[in-house]
Length: 58
Image (cartoon, rainbow, N blue to C red; front, top):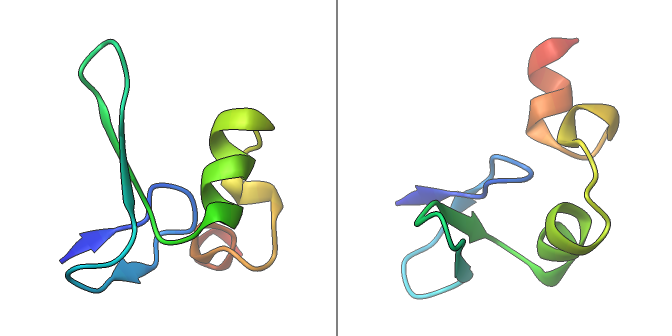
């Protein structure tokens, strides 16, 4: 199973979205919320309490 690129949550098989950058880097997303925060708003996941990245660094 893949992990969300933004929140690091496990994505169940058959769900989520995959985004491929022009540099052939792949980003997996569990929800639209994670996709918009990373791509459109260019946010850092470490700054948000609801992400597992934040919980790892605390």
